[in-house]
Every structure is written in structure tokens, then in C-alpha cells.
Length: 520
Image: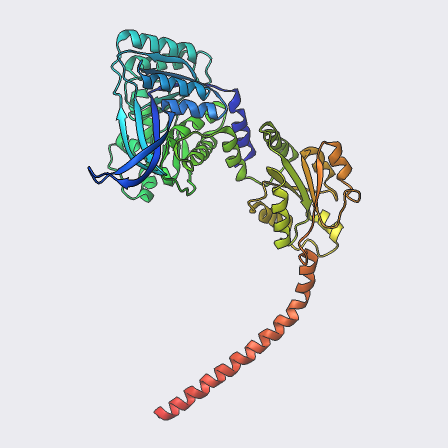
């Protein structure tokens, strides 16, 4: 991921989003099951706790808020206990509820799941599609128009339960005509939004092939090929500028008018009952587009947010810091001081403890890895300054480094304990220390605080100094010295093996000659 993506994610907090659609309550009844019922071959679950979270359009709004933006939900609930509970859990998660209309004739949608351990045993649903009268529709339309007046983006979350009545769809069209903004639609029938001025649509694979009037491929690996050549058709049917088709474990494909298709790939994740990844995807997609990202950038961000949620259980949301970590984890090598300052600023806002160390790390060995793991344990984020090639040469002499900067940085970045690798040209890391302002500065070897040149600078910046001992008999210089003697030993061993193979070949020829003589 590039620096621009991290910048887009950081800008989510300045955005205002309205989500309009079918909100529902996702209820999880957790318990344990240790025996079967005598009445039927079913487990008996002893309930221990209940967890209520927003689902459907409610989950989309929660994801918008969790990603750092301001979220308002426009929807309809009943005056029943489920409706009251849904409003409570939305407010508890920071979602604005001014746009929620409470209608006595409506039964709030709710999905109840019984879970024993990590296994969902059964789900039962209550509520039905909303049958709205003119008064309720008028109220809903008015609240949508009021809240959308200063919104940067509108997200449609249409599950087909009636909130997006024709009158509300027409209101969206009028809003876009009067003041165009990012409008992203996630709906079971996207053709309903063809004339609304929609920016992007997010069908899943099943919705995309249903839109195209084609059968579903059973093999997930063939699905990308099936829809990959039909991007223009999907865009025409939806009237959108772009379409992001999600393919579950196969990632997603972005289609834009006049541009080649763009593919993202999902990382393998183990999950037993993840729900709502599509809501997370559309939330992050809309936020990224509203923040000025290109289509591919927005799709990469949306895919990253969905990947975070897929690793969780139940109906979940992606937090801003989780998305930032996921995005930044794929770009651990820092190219500029400005890029480093941006990331460290985000860490400081989150209250995270920054650890800094530096070195040549020419031939990475067990001593280095032990040292870096100990350094990471002193805080939350480990930044490693690495000497550039000329700097190593001045410090270590001709013939060093053995490995160039790019190789050394790539190996360091592959270690899970290392969060960021930053090269520097100088002989000392003082410039980097002033930029990083670490909470802890770590050095290895026989240094003391008094003999460490950087100690006074670190402490003047509010940090502390920690000296870690090197692992005995583990040093790059020692490894190089041993390697200097290896060629002679290797040559002798190779010669011995060659003589042995020669004798073996001669023996085989002798046996073959004797066999041929016998046959003759």
C-alpha cells in the first residue's frame, strides 16, 4: 500500500456520511451445550449472556463511525422492544439516530442466533418487510433530505425490506441532481438506482450474476473469469460510474468506465461465523471515494477493511486504527521523513508506545532476531533505523556491507516484530531520533548510558534509554570471519566426495563389464 492510501484513511475523520436502508437487530445468545435433549436429538444450550449489535444498514452505519467518520442512519423501526434496543445499541456506538422513524405498524427486523462456544446452532428471524403509509414515507423523506444537506457521501443499504420505497429512491435522485456527491449503493436489485446518479455500486457475486441473468458458477475460482468480461454490462444495468463486485474468498473486481478492470485478492483467513463484511466493504469504499481516492485505491482500502472484519466472529466492524495497521503493515519500508512523521503521528494519537533502535543489520542472524524481539517487547511500535550502504562502508570498512540496503531492509521488514524500517545516510541516527522522538531508545552490546552518544538527545526529547545485551557468540563479524575459512574446507570435502564418486563409477563400470562378459 502506498502513502496516499494511509493519507486517505487518516482523512476519514473529517467526513460526514448518511446511511439509508433496512436496519435490523443482530442478537447473539451465547451459552454452553454439554448434553442432548430427550425430546429430540438436539443439544440443550444453557444460556449465559446476550449480545445485541446493529445489523444490516445499522451495521453499515456502525462501520462508518468505527472508521472515524460521522454517521447518521435513516431507517424505520417499530415501537417494539427490538426497535428500542436497536436505537440504544446504535447510539452506544456513536451513530446518529435522528433519521430513524419509529412506526407502530412496523415490526423491527431481528436476527437471533444461538451460539454454543464458537458454533452457531440455529438462527431464527423476526419482523417483516415494512408496509409504509404516506405519512411514514413523507417523514422518512424529510429526514433524509435534512441530513443529506451537508453530507459528503450517501450509502444505500437496501436489503429489500421496504425502507427504500420508490419515493425514497426518487428523493435520492433529486438530491444528486441538485447537489452531486458520492453515492454508493449496496442493494439486492441495483437496477432500481440506475437513474439516481449513483457513483458506485457494490454487488456480491450472486447479485452480479442475477443482474446479468446468468447461472452461478459452483467453483469459486471460475467466478472472477465469469464476471470479469462483463464489467461494461454491469455498469450499464446499474447506471454507475464504477462497480466493485465482491467475490468472497477470491477478492473483488472493480469496473470503471473507460478503464481496464482492477482486481484485488483476499488474504486467507480462518473464520467460523463472520458476518457483515459486505457492510464493512461498502462503508470503506464510500469513505475512500469521498476522501478523494481513485477507484483502485478505494477498492484496496475497502478490501483491507473487509479482511479485518472477516478475521472476527459475529457481526463486527472495522476500527480506524485496525485499518491503518492493516494498510501500513504492507508498506513497512519508510521512504521519507514525512511519511514516517505521518505514521508516528497516528500512533501517538492512539496512545501507543514507540520504540526505536538502529544498526547495520548486514547478515541477519539469531542474535539480531533475539535482540529485535526484546526491543519490541518494550513498547507497541518498533521502528528500526538501518544504515545506508555508504554509511556501513564508513563504519565497517571496505567489503561491507555484504548485503545491499534493499536486501537488508526487506529481510528486516519480513520480521513480525518490526513495524517500520527507515534507512539513514549519516553515521549516527540523531536526525532520525529527533524525528521519531521515541518513548524508548534501545541499543545492544557493551554500551552504558554514559558511553552512548545518543542518550542525552533521547532523554532531552522525553524518552528513556534501554541497553540490551547481545546474544553471546553471535555477531556479523564473527560469521564473516568463519566464512573466510569455509572455502578451503569445502574444497577438500568436495574433492573427497569427487574421489568417492569416481571410485563408485569405476566400480559400477567394472561390474557392468563383468556382467557383459558373462552375457557374451
